[in-house]
Length: 87
Image (cartoon, rainbow, N blue to C red):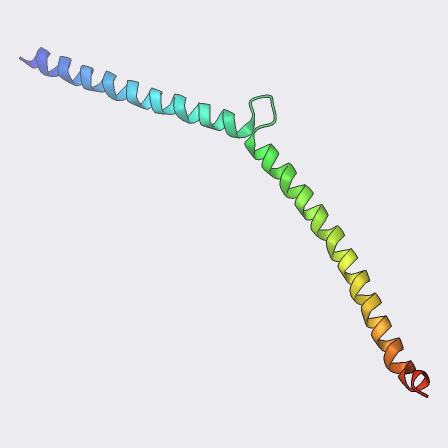
């Protein structure tokens, strides 16, 4: 009777151990997929895309500032010379 109970407990322990190892294996597979496992993984690709987007955003911001400065200069010149044009 006691041996049967120990046998059941061992069986439950083995089943639990199998489930834990199975979940750990799935977790390891997902981590390898994210990190790349020797190849560019999803995280590396996402970081590269983010870097490209930041670089494009900075470039676009600089261009927008030049355009805004040019428009402001043209408006200022037009206001300053409006008296000379309509004479």
